[in-house]
Length: 404
Image (cartoon, rainbow, N blue to C red):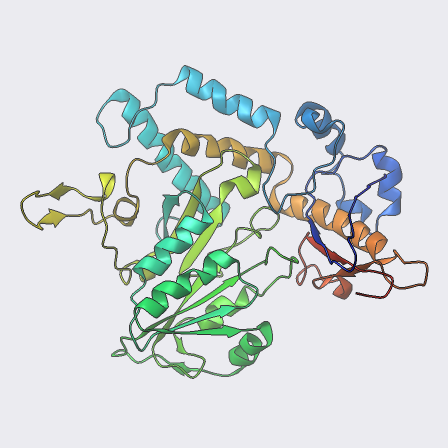
């Protein structure tokens, strides 16, 4: 396999480049298999060549390594999606017609499928459809019950969409704190006082399971260790907001074991199509604290023009989904999940991506300038060799021979 990446260095300018590989075009997969550190995990059990030929023909002359930016759809996946909307009439879910019933059925099926994918059910979580992970984060920031006694803690490695929540916290007088993983580990080792029943202070801790800059991974165990305790020397109840936008495309998450209060993701990151659809998973036990003010479309049952009287649904999904949901896109989600399951699901995807990642890291690490200095600074936890600490993202900084 020859993978050529062209990088331009202008003077002492440093350029950061990220690679995240899900399906890599390989000229001779058998020869490549012999050269990688983890050959057993590579190639989706021999399916890679077939996938390239039948479902990724558009990449015949190119290599796609921007899976952190967006996943790639299978040809068969979108063919099934468009065939369905050609044959089945769909309509507004807020209407009452055969077409709208078709949409309603598909939306309900999609919610159930998402919960099953993450090993939970509607008895524990609600699925609120949004336009993406960023919109989901916005919704939490806007509706979280901030007070002057509240605290918002987040890792410095969070996506900037998480940092935007800070503005809602500050607007309501709350305090924010930027911490690193060592701070969280130290806090989790401490016993933490149990929250008293009369404590009405609500605090939020946000972190990604995989950060999308270098692919560093963070422990799921933090969720259970932070929830419900008086943590970080702050009184009150703690809620955990989990960003799995970078994690979900290549890893499995069991929400029955690690029950974060709020979980955000984007589906195009997982399987490329459709774009513009994400989800906010809200744990039932935490839904009641969220204070949503705006209503519109399906998120209101009745409103009076001449006064402030209105009535909103009791259902969490109806209450948080303003306007008409993207029912055509939502109906296509099942074909994306089917595509992932077809290559072996998260376990097979993780093995393949990590096999390629280990190979790429080893090759990039060996690059040297004429004077022996490394060509690249490589970020993340790759050197640990621990797949629980590092995801399939390789981010490098191109250095001059002087190390600048």
